[in-house]
Image (tube, rainbow, N blue to C red):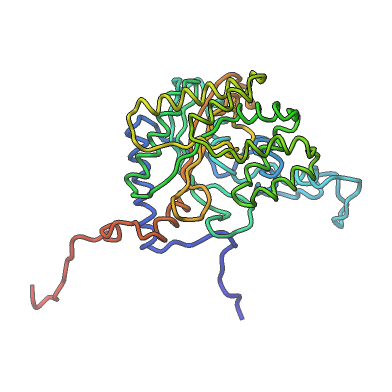
Length: 381
C-alpha cells in the first residue's frame, strides 16, 4: 500500500481560487513599488552559508535550512570513519559546515546586500530595488507562521537620508490603503535602544536586551523579565529598564522624556534626533494617519542600526505583517563598507490570511474569465 501523499509541515498548496487572490496582493504591491521608482531583481533560492550565518543572531542562525553537499560528503570530510562514526571530537556546528556549504535564504535583505557588493560596478547609487520571492525558515509552524513564505521587499541602498524612511512609510500607507487593510505603523530607533542599555548600566548586554524585548508582544513582560534575569541582567538594571518598556505617552511626550533620560548617551541622543526628524517629516506631509513611536519595538535581526518599522493589522492577532529598518553597514560584511541602506518587507502570506479572515478581497478578484465561447456542434454551425 503506497503512502498517503503529503507535503512538509509549514508549507502549503494553493488552489486557483487562492492564487488569483494572492496575485491580487502581489500585483497591488508591485504597482506601488514601481510607482515610487523601484526596480525589480531576483536572487537564487540558495546562498552560500558563509553569506547567511551570523547576520540574524544566534536564534536566527538556528532557523536556517541547510542544503547537503552533493557527492560523498561523509568520507570527504576526513572527520568520519567509513561506518559513519565520528573519528575525532567535533561540535555540531563544525559538523554541519562539513556536510553543508549552502542554505535556503532566510530573508531577502542579506542576499540583496550580497547582490549590491557583487554587482556594484553595474549599479547607480542610490539604488532602489524591489524583490518578490519566497524565503524559508525552520520555525515551528503555527497561525501566521510558515516554513515557506513570500516576502515583498523594497529597499534603497547608498544614502543615509531619512527622507527614504519617510518614503517607505508612505509606500506602506499606500499599499495597505489599496488593499483596504486597516493597520497601525510603529517606529523606533535601534540607537535609542542602545542608549537605554547605556542608561541602565548594561551597554554590553544590548543584543541580549533587544532580543528579549522583541518577544514582548508574544510572551509578555514577566517572561521578558525572567529571560533577561536568567541571562545575567541584574535586578537593579531591570528596575531601570521596566519604566522604558511601560512608557505610555504620546509621541511628543515620549521624545521629551527621553531627551532628559538619555542626556548622557551620545548614541541614544543621536537616535532620538533621527526619530524626531522623521516624525517632523511625517507631520509635514499633512497626512492624518498617525505613526506610533513605540519604545518596545526592537526588531530582533542584528543588522538593524537606526530606524526600525513594524506594521500590524488592526483587530487581528497575527503578529507583524510588514517590517524593516535602517542598516548602516550590511554591505561591509561582504567587502563594501560604509554603504547605508533602508528597507521594508511585506509578508504576503500573513496579509493574505488577514484579508481572508476579514473578508477584504474585492468580489471581482475571483473572476478570471470574462469571455465564454460555446460550441454547439457541427450541425448547428
